[in-house]
Image (cartoon, rainbow, N blue to C red):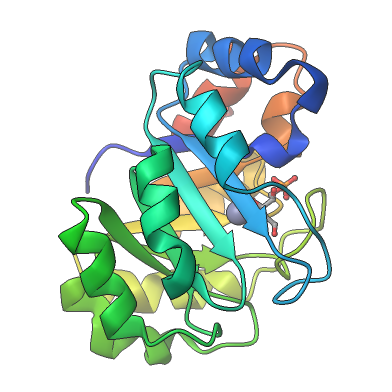
Length: 216
Ligand code: DX5
Ligand code: ZN
């Protein structure tokens, strides 16, 4: 399996000093930044949009792992690509056509990801796997940080790994050292964590604890 990548979710950062927060995570050994875009329609919460992504792009050197929790991602792909997203992930439950949206992301030279919420079976992703660079398995209901990890994501990760040995499989929601280990064992090779990393006294140790098991 590929190296496990750690993607801190900025939702848990201090928005009053985002550039300092980015720097703190870069120094801690993060591999990418996870940016949660919510529109208040697809999920009952609103975060930030294109202008914020474009301006923090200048303050960060790691790739941007964009997670679109919006009703019609297709309509915004180009704007987010221009704003500096590197990986663009949208939801299978959104209203956009998955194939058209994946193709558009690729035409713009970006990596395409498709995500499933906890209630959607992983089997629904299978027809798209050969077109994707990443799948994002939600381990909480999308919309808010700080929720409890749902173990129902583990068989989904296993199934996807069986079907796609080379695919980047990311997990998002309730990730800490213990739940991260369960996800890695199931076959995930990218872990998104918000409250665990930004709330850590020692972020470098927290990043390390997600990459490897420290207890044995
Ligand atoms: C939830 C977001 C997550 C969230 C994770 O809709 O997609 O990225 O920020 O936060 P934690 O790690 O605190 O569960
Ligand atoms: Zn997310």
